[in-house]
Image (cartoon, rainbow, N blue to C red; front, top):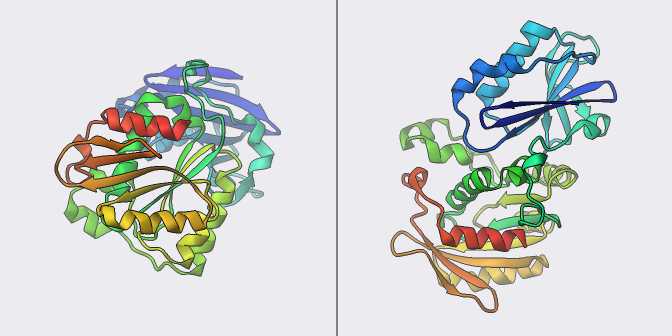
Length: 317
């Protein structure tokens, strides 16, 4: 096992069962100029079947792949797909592994570690001790996806160990939205956003993905659609907790009843508004927050405040 440290990135290489697993962990936002330092990753690759594991931007993954092919002539390069239950081959110089071939998670799982384990401060609340699958529910246009974008960046910057080792966001609504929506102008969003039909095949893929994620992630956020129906109820039935996000406080009791039917533990209720101030409306019998400004065009400048910190502390409990 060997470790390398680049700017805001830790790299750990571990061999297991004929595979070389390159574990990559981020400690915050990454400067693209880090690509100049990739050649610092020097290793005697005895196992030429390489698996990349970690939460990294596509451009960094591409540069690492190109570097490995150019310098080490691997037989196979695959990337671990946490939601797919294995690693997907993206480069192959072997007849036994075609592009798109899935290597089973069980074949290389022991090679997966958190590259930032040295950063974990025991006893400081930087661990997810019990698995939580938290579904974010509520009426459409209430800001669920924007809130998830804020929480994603907050966890990335404040809890890099949780982000790299435990955390995943599953988009369980075929509306084509994701974190990328908050980083592009509306004109580009409308051009590239692709909506699918919420049919039985999509539902099946979401539930299969959830089952795979539960095998190796302890904190899973599920971004669900803004309807109470049988399809969404099946997704909720595979979760453990819920957070209600609503732009209309009169709708909240309806959503409380819906998640109660799936026997989910309610972590918090959130009323959203376009203006006003972030605040705690009440703490009993559970936390009820008001969060304002969850608008896509403003979300890049959003600074996580005490309310976001309080919300995440409830999530970690």
